[in-house]
Image (tube, rainbow, N blue to C red; front, side, top):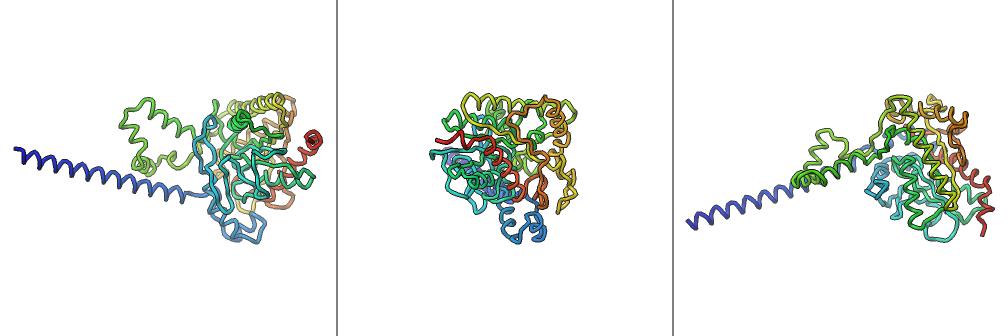
Length: 386
């Protein structure tokens, strides 16, 4: 009897060990497959020929921008961060870098938030961060170059753009810096495109679906379901079954009515009013930039690579939102204090967009110089002198 028990016990132990090894191997394999899928997921930039790269970037160095495109998926790589829900993942690449402090350097000179001196913080989404361009070709980099050329050689311009951020997240991101004792001399908010992309009130970020799943698992589901929710095998199965939330973190929505559009306008307008009150109380300058978008004023027939409305997706919402904001501005019902309206701005001859919505290096430079001119015009240079 004892011998039988030992044989059964040994067989059960071997079976359990085999099951554990198989589960571990499956988890490891699923993790490896998910990593390959994430690493190979499409970049924000489509794949172009060298001739198309040359036209899009007005350059003879198509290889450089092919490298940037290959590195481009890193621009959408984000990690959890309190209150704003996510931030850019620190990364050091050849053309794309995110520091541990959460900003993208301009590659013009070393930057340090703790260094004494005047600082400009620039907030926005992926157009501000600079999707499809090098560190030195972003809007904030162009602002810094223009300010230095104007004599403000001690000013540091920090690029706090984050993929898919809109005005609510940007406001909270500044609040977190302020409560940590990090205050700019000037805060610039470049908005319009992403606010209309997320035509959802109350606000939802691109991480909303992921956080809902995670908190539901922890607060209401049994232990085994929570374990399954964390399983790489389950994640892979969901991905293969068509669940986009495993790979994609961008969840926009179409504006269904004029009331939806008006709600987004109110959100952006209210965030600007709140920020204005903060700046007045805490003592820093503000510039709100109404950014150019390809669905307002711009003639898309100028594009060197055609783009259809279907390719614009939720970004097409701005086609309805921008005229509403322009009309409200003309009627005096839109917040215009500290507002730099660049909605009609575009290059005179250079190409404007390198993909559906992201600016070319030349257009980034034009926008950056317009912002720098506004900073200088307001006399910030004189007011900020020691």
